Image 1: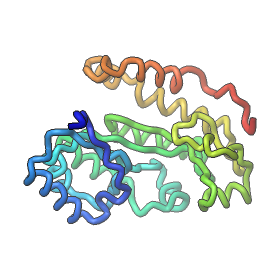
Image 2 (image 1 turned 90 degrees about the vertical axis):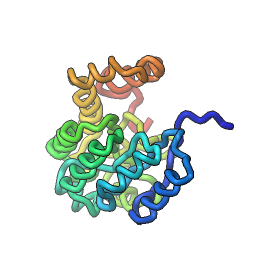
Image 3 (image 1 turned 90 degrees about the horizontal axis):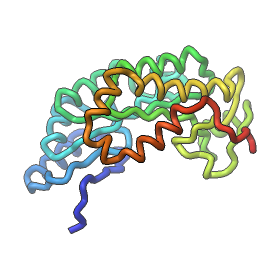
Image 4 (image 1 turned 45 degrees about the vertical axis):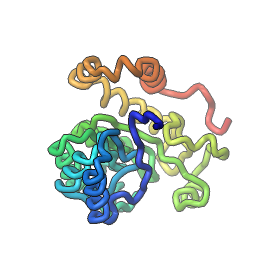
Length: 238
C-alpha cells in the first residue's frame, strides 16, 4: 500500500449536490474505507450543508473541512465578492461541524477593491469569532482573465505580472486601486495572523498538541513569515 496518513479531497464542488455528498459518505462507511483520515482541502459551500452531512463525513473518516468564508464584512461579501452566502450561514456551518466533531479551516481574503481598514477589521474579527482550528488569510490576487484583473487593470495599478507572484499565501499586495493602498493591505494581513494565532487559548492549544512537535520546523518557518515585521523587503513592481 501507499501507507497514506491523510487524504486531501480537492473537489471544488464536493457538497454542491448535498445528496451526492451524503451518498459518497455512506458508501465509504459501507465499504469500511474509513481508516485513513481525509480533509476537504478546498472550501466547502456553507449554503449546501446540514448537520447530517457533517455527521456522515465524520463517520466516513473526515478529519477537517475548509470553508471559503472570504469576508466578514456584509457589503464586501454581497456586492464585491458576490457570494451567495451570509455570515449567519457561515456561523451555522461552523457550529454543525463542531457538533459533529470535525476540525474546521477558514479561508479569508483581504484587499478586495473598495476595501477599507474597517472592512478588513470586520473580517479579522469574524475569523476570531468563528475560531476555526486553522485560519488562512490571503491577499486578493487579480489572476489574468478574471473579472478582478479587468477591474484593477482598468482602474488601478497592478504590481504582479508573473504567475509566481500570484501565490495565495503571498505576503505582498498585488495591486492598488482607489484609496486602497498596498501598505494598508499588507499591514492588516500581518495583523490578522498575529491577532488570530497569538491568543492565550490558541497558544495553549497549539503548545499542547502533538502535531506541533511533529511539524515544529514548519511552524517556526511560518511564525517568522507571518509575524516578523510588517512589510516585505521586496519593492512593489520590482
